Amino acid sequence: DGGITQSPKYLFRKEGQNVTLSCEQNLNHDAMYWYRQDPGQGLRLIYYSQIVNDFQKGDIAEGYSVSREKKESFPLTVTSAQKNPTAFYLCASSETQDSGNTIYFGEGSWLTVV
Amino acid sequence: AQSVTQLDSQVPVFEEAPVELRCNYSSSVSVYLFWYVQYPNQGLQLLLKYLSGSTLVESINGFEAEFNKSQTSFHLRKPSVHISDTAEYFCAVSEGSSASKIIFGSGTRLSIRP
Image 1 (spheres, each protein chain N blue to C red):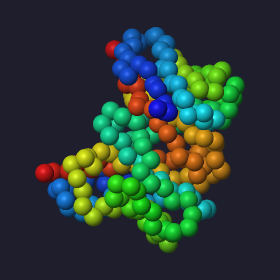
Image 2: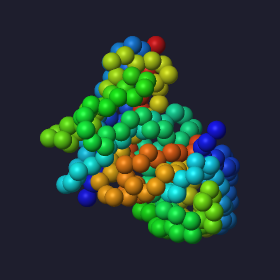
Image 3: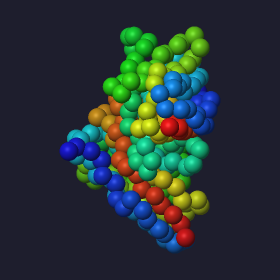
Image 4: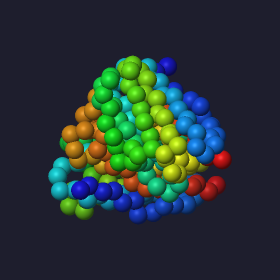
């Protein structure tokens, strides 16, 4: 089945460590996104990519980095510079960047800093 | 700038009762409107969307939403809810040309009592 696969589902990180969240899609979508979700809040955009080898900062990019070397992959690195990284992270994709397109989401990754 | 307000953070209802989840937005231009549903520990799934045409849009599982331009609202309704509808519902609005500009509301948690 086509979809978006995020791994790991649960991740614990010690303070000062970088961690990378994986996101793979087999929907053949051009655009991919990373969102952060905190309790009682909506989704906030971290980074997005319209096409391979291109990505743009979203609203809360500080302390995060991404790469888009392949169409199907868009990993997110949470660096030690991110002051409050504990959150639920959602990867998503859409066929193109057009605003009427449906955004498809992965099942998310829980990151906890211990 | 666009914004989305979901007026109720939680809505408890009894099974088979009707429900309305409220969503208001602010924007000075034409918008696309979405409702997404999130089941526990999962990503979001599109429930329905308004792009143009008929102001009443329906989902396959009995939900409907009506775009009201004069009141800048896009409330979600269902005449009779089921236990399986227990989830968090997010209203979203997109006014730009890019899907990366979509703004999500803070969510409404719908809890169904037997």
